[in-house]
Image (cartoon, rainbow, N blue to C red; front, side):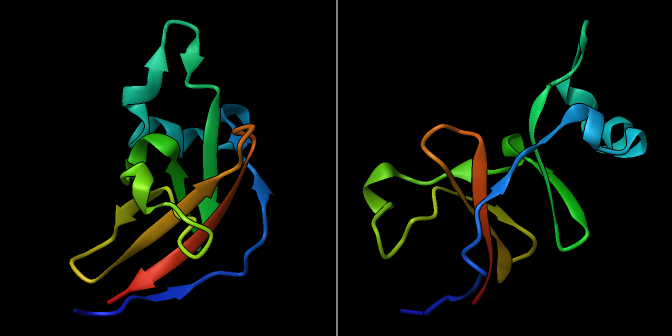
Length: 101
């Protein structure tokens, strides 16, 4: 079994709203989130110079979420690396980490 190397600063941060995301990012990367009223209003964040939205992440089985493994969803950058996210209970904040294998 292979171990993951997880890097995080353990800080909680607030999600960004659509008006805080550059228009070019919304148009190029999140066109699928556009509605008649505009873009999906929240759930955006910037990590390591890349913009993400919660819809970019695949959720993990709830049984895997523990105090030692708080990560609720992941986004693969490649075969051996990606981003993990933990969302606060109220859905307003997140913690993020990078994983490598």
